[in-house]
Amino acid sequence: MQSKYLEVSPGVNLYCQVQDFTDPWTQAPTIVMVHGFAESSASWYAWIPFLARQYRVVLFDMRGYGKSTPMPSDFSWTMGCLLDDITAVANSYSLDQFHIIGAKSGGSLVLQYAAKNPDKVISVVSVTPPVVGAKAVPDWLKQINEEGVKPWARATMPGRLGTKASPQEIDWWVDHVQGLTPESTLLGYLKWVPKLDLREEVLKVLCPTLIITTSGSGLRTVQSVQEWQSKMHQSSLLVVEGDAWHAAAAYPDICAKAAIDFLNKV
Image (cartoon, rainbow, N blue to C red; front, side, top):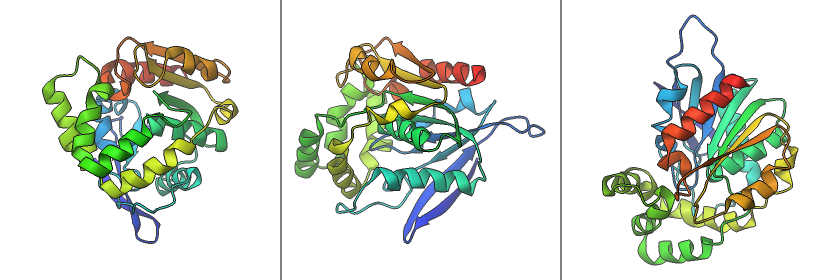
């Protein structure tokens, strides 16, 4: 694994890494992966064995998350800023064209990125992306303010990972991923999320796209996903049987295998 810190604006550094187990005498295509809200690149750990043998995988912690610079609660989050960070990461690895994969709000970002950068993005895999801000945000803000990050992470984890998640699995995600997120980052980011509405923007994505959702998500129905996905160009939908709303984490083997099959066809 190769890792580095990339300064994207004064005082803001992104932690980046490359996972690459492709044959060193070949020029393997690259995937850029974008994690979701209250996570880090660590959330992709189970995907790497599927992807990194055939593709060069570039991972990074979004600003405010993981090993990247925490963001103050009054930071003005914008879609443009987050998309610029993806471009900065891609440029730092001299990527002219690449595949892009995202989960949760990272799935929303990769759809918007593909819409804005059709010359750069070869294909998109977006796992359980919200195209409209989550209705639970006010309750989440209240709980984080009153109880802190870890209690919020633990309270919401059963919905994220589904009823089949073991206590040990829940503990790992709370203690090593969500629960480590700086409170200031979460409070600022959650104030921006309700403004999200990408229902028209996703229709501008022209490259091959795979959308993955779950049959029993507590956040959105399959029908609500189909309403916008079915209007997209070159788009296919995979519905994973399960009640988790974070399919990339709860069902990584299913999702990663579907992603690699999709990428190989592209």
